[in-house]
Length: 259
Image (cartoon, helix red, strand yellow):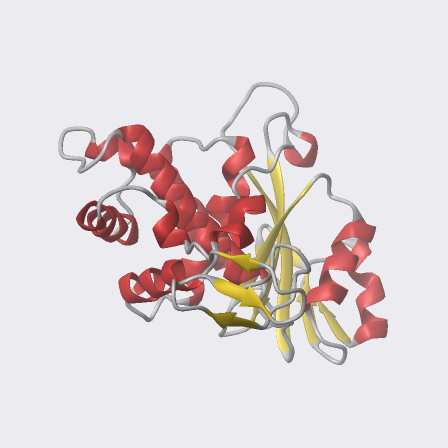
């Protein structure tokens, strides 16, 4: 959505010189797409985007990269921000959904489990046989998790979760089925294999990077969600159109997130 930088109104006239004029306050402004925000040559951007779609990390292009490593990383970051932006705007799920949490991060000495040092806790919601949403969280807080579930699912849904007691309140919002496990395997026919399969998919995609900067981790999560939710489509035309459609100012807050 293209907004006026003065009053944030969305309707404008397009002028002959290519600028826009706000219909509310009359401010004239220029809209710069994410694709235009990168000053690389058109051919170079297309080459980098094709390699991004194929999942080739920048460090593996060091002998045949069409741009410097820093420029390629900046371009990749723009692509990931576009993916994260559209995934954040996805409509709430309904029907049968699965909820689960996991941790991302390499092995380190010391405490294991949810309080391990260097780990990032990620909460996920998957619409069964459909799409997924994930959120990095500061701590495994039941109140925070339930708030995310309420914000991103519709009332009356059927929730499949593990036996963490924080999920008990979901029975008020819809039907709640607890999946209990014995030796890592679910008892009975109820399962949360969908969201657990996504965790495996996500960690598989992150493995070639050998670790990612913590301040950009949310962008990598957005990329993985976008890939998963469009896993049956050709990503190159989708991402190209997305970068040409989105305004750079819309994704700028996503580019760096501390903490």
